[in-house]
Length: 511
Image (cartoon, rainbow, N blue to C red; front, side, top):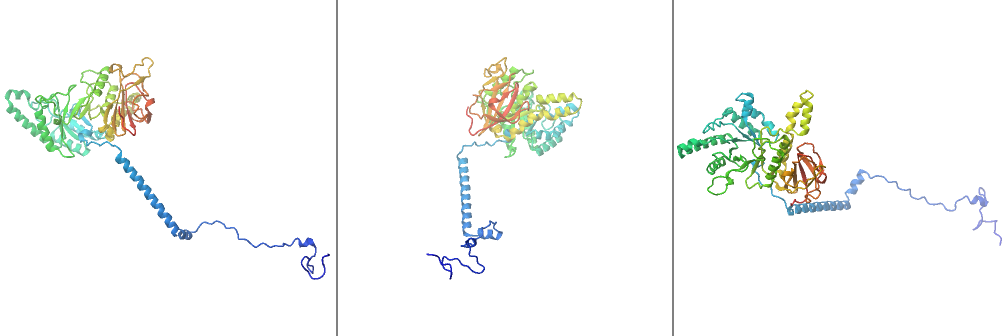
C-alpha cells in the first residue's frame, strides 16, 4: 500500500509547508532529542576562616580532640612510669660523702723560696698571695705552707714566723678564704717538744711544752688554718700527741669546715706507732702522704721507676685515706707519667711547688724552636703551656666521679710489641719494662690508665679485657697529642707514654 503523501500530515509523513523543506536531507540536521543542561563540575576552594571555625566547633571534632589528648596523656604517663620503674629497679652505686680533704688537690709551697730569690723578707708571703689566682685556675683546693717556723729553735715559737710576719700570714689566710683555698701549716721536722731538754729535766717540762704547743695550735685555728702536718719521724707522731691534737681540731671543726691532722711519710713504709702492742690507730690521722718513688739522692733509672710503679700498684692501699706525691727524682719523661699516675690513683694528690711545670715533648720542641728565633714567644710558651697536662688531669679529676671515689682494679695486661728487634711480652715483670694498666670505675663509667714504661711501641692484644667496651675517648696523654675517639683494638701506646681513656658501657667490669 502506497503512503499517503497528500493531505494532513500524519504519523510517518513528512511535513511540508512554507519555510519547511520536505527533503530528507534537511530533516536529518534537526536534532530529535535536546539534552537537559547538567550541573557544572564543582571547583575545589579552600575553606574560609568562618567555615573553619564553624567546622571546628562541631561535636564530632570536639570528640576527636578529646580522644587525641587522652591518648597522648596516657602514652606519656605510661612512658614516665616505665622510666621510673627502670630507674628504681636498676642497680646504682651509692656515692660516698667525701670530705673536703678527700676531694681537694694539695699544693705544697715554701714562701722562703721567693724570699731567697729576691733577698727581701716580706716578699715571700706576698709572692704566695700573688699566686693564689694561678693556683685556683689549676684546681688547687688546699695549700700546705712549709718553712714558716725556725727549725733550729728548740722548741720553736709557733706563734711567730720566720718568713714574713704574723699579720702577713693572717692576710694570706684571708685571701685564701676568699679564693676558696684552705691552708695547712707544716710542722714537719720541727723539734716541738725540745726532746733533749725534756729528757734532762723530766716530764714536768714536757707538760709545759705540750701546753704551750696547744695554745699555739689554738691560735692558728682561730685564724682559720684548716689543719697541721707532721712527719712520721717527729716526736709529735705518737698516740698521745695525735689524740690531743685530734681533740683540739675537732673542737674547731664544723660541718663545712673540718680541721685535719696530716702525716707525711718519709720512708718507704709508715712508721708504726707505739701503742703498747696494738696496731696503728688510723682514726688518729685523716691522711698519710706517701711517695710514688722511693726516696733517693740520685736520678732514678728506668728500671728503678718501673719496679716502684709495679710495687705501688700491686700493694693494697689499706684502710687509711692515702695521698700521693712524686717523691724521688726522675727524668721529665717519667715525671709526666708519675703526674698521670698520681692524679688518677685513689686518694688526694699532693704536688710540690714547680711539679706542675712539666712541658710535653711537643711543647719542648716548639719552645726550643721559637727560642732559637730570638723572640719572646718561646718564653711565653715556657711559662704558660707546661702546666697544660696538670690542668687537664686536675679538672678531669674534679668533675669525674670515677676518679674521685671509683673502684680501683689492676688489670693483667697483654700487649704485642711493634719493634722488629724485640717481641718480648710485657707480662714478664718489671725487668721487661712492663705495660701497667688499671681502671677507676663508677657505675658504667671507666677510666682506663695505661703506662708504657718501655722503649717500644705497644699495641693491645684483641683478647685483652673482653668485658671492656671496644671504643673510648681520650682524656689526656703525656704528649698532649691524643684527641677524639679511639678503638682499643687499634690503640698504639708510644714508648714512655701514659694515656687516660674514658670508657662507657651498660654493665660493670668484672676482672
